Amino acid sequence: MSLVSPLRLPDTRQPSLMTRRGWWLLGLNLLIPGTAQLLAGSRRWGRFAVGATFTLWAIALAGLALFLLWRPVALTIATNVVSLWVAQLGLVFYAVLWLATTINAFTLVRLGTVAPTARGPLAAFTALSLVLAVGTTGWAAWNTGVGRDALGAVFADGSIEDPIDGRYTILLLGGDAGPDRTGLRPDSISLASIDADSGAVTMIGIPRNLYNAPFSEGSPLWGEFPDGYTCGDDCLISYLYPYAEEHPELYPDAEAEGSTPGIEAMRDAVEGVTGIPVQYTALIDMQGFEQLIDALGGVTVDVAEPVTMAINGGTIEGVIPVGEQRLDGYTALWYARSRYNITDFDRMEHQRQIQEAILRQVEPATIITRFQAIAQAGTQVVRTSIPQSMLGVLSDLAVQSRQYPVENLELVPPLVDNVAPDYAAVRAMVAEATARTPVD
Image (tube, rainbow, N blue to C red; front, top):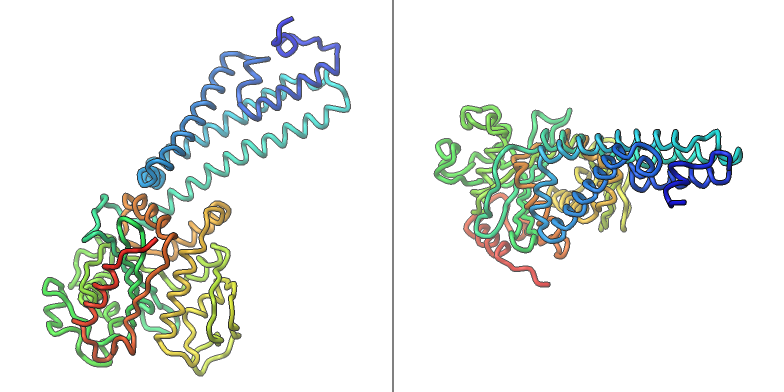
């Protein structure tokens, strides 16, 4: 008797044999869809299903090899909308294939011929197989679609760009819109300068109450303010955002390019302050910041001084104590924005701590288990000019950056007088900070 005969041509009068056969068919189908059909059903269908399975495995192994050998290219493909469409269709196809082969394998078992005590376990195993195989594959397909939609909603169109002088620069703005504010003003202004070889990050913190911000001669604001933004207390650097929003004629192409007049004005001001070009911008809505932190499962920060969750003269919501604290979104937002007996410069430090905590603590397991919530929060919180085509390059640099501490340069007193800043000295500090090479 051949090895296949008991599977394809079983003696249905032997319940013990039929039970063993049933377990083999269902177990093999769970491991390799189509094997049950090859052994006991339609060989043509079985060859198709097994071939599709091996094709999927080959693609997955090729992707893993590409990630290990050429990570930037792998990440670029993985963050491409077309690639995600293909991946989602492939996963849906495989989920349907696995569903069909599992149901057919269950019919091939011939449940009425197995031992009565095995019928319940075999049926339960089939149901578990559907949950594990079809459910997992369907979940992966769903999240692939969520990720594709999030990428399309958040990131801009554009091509891959080379670094400038060996570095990429991203302007990070924390938008402080709220019921107690007129319009939106950047409450947090940071310039991330990223070494294109190592991924090491230098964060340049710019106080929102910086006076006399200069502009280059090519800026639309040069004609309005050739000597800089020098109208006193009404001309803090953060006020440039609402000013430009009220004068959209200064940046007529901003909306068409996926930006806003306010963001472009902040870009020009930061370039004038630091002396280095800004390649990309990202505006984070602080009102949605709480949702993003919760989606990440919270962040851990080392609190040096107690932080009262309130604004001066307002209701005290609580106190964040000294020490290492795990903050949820609500508490993290208060930590970043509290105005109770602390200075703007203290708030800048708190905001930088939150930024670093997100960079350092987001792990692959967090992304996988909370992907849908993170993607949904991201589409509501972030507006950026970073093109999708750059995500592979920047994601690879983000992985490399974990090897090094984030270098911080805070342009605040006593290092910099925010009321009467020496911008020549500021640019020299920035140049020195961004010229450093990370040491292993």
